[in-house]
Length: 199
Length: 234
Image (cartoon, rainbow over all chains, first blue to last red; front, side):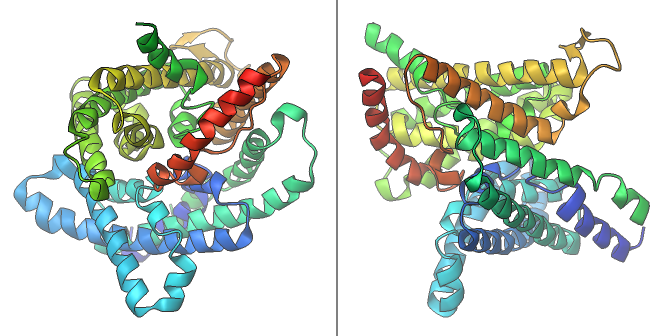
């Protein structure tokens, strides 16, 4: 498979067929917690895309040029989580100092995703899949976009839910979860398309 | 003695991490596909919870307040790596079933949340019991959901066929089924509590930040006594 079609396959599967939130159950907490308001959805998605892309790049470099030569591959979980935490802190400081408008729109969400399972997962899976640098970055970016897509779609679903009248015990979180189930069912429709397109 | 028993059962019923505190839903949804996977995850998480609670409780006076969250994460990640190695070496099948979710125990609100809410403020024995109770509470709920999902979705329990082939509803063991079953489980709890005249308003733990969990969890503790008071009144 050529490099370009591999990148296209990663893009397509991360956004649709292997969507982190709706297919792989990663990053469910922010998905259910932040999806109430459209603005916070946008902010959260932006922050996740940003951090995932950066984290993929940095952890790939750390893994290949530090951990492999030193024989520390078995410590990837512990090192990656620290790298991500430090990275988020660093990004927050840099944005605050130099890119004020971006900080104002993403700032609140940055500390929230330090230990988001989706961010850690994308870095670990990059290594597991033996992606090269460009593939890792594309993987991080598109996984973030997939997350954002799911979040924004679900935001719309929740708006409709507010007007619904579910049975009493289902009010609140339970009916939200059932709605999430229906949303994720729509994403099952993409299964198999990727293989046909790029296979 | 009664006090200690109370700490242990607290995690199983009154403050069940999955159904009441609603922490760490990612793993509940993802790993509850098969009973064996759920059991493995439950044991792994209980081990990490107990160990990290004990160590953090021992270190609670040494850890500076400002960098406590990174310190907790390092302690937790150490035990997670330990579990990962053991599972990879001796239980390759379980390793395949749990996949990346085993490594992700590091960022589960349950572990970090208990470190912040309990272990950093209590003695070693109490923290040990709290970790054990929380772990058991998590395991029971995840096993219950997995039992239903494996039975309906795959027609089996622990690979023993119960429903004849061709009669299972596959979607229950896929992603939508996970969301749905978890929703039903919470609704069932609300219904049962409602029958007893108690009120429980399910809200996602930590306002949806696995990450900033430890921080937002502080709000939850303040709420907890209030909620209990309501229960008592009712």
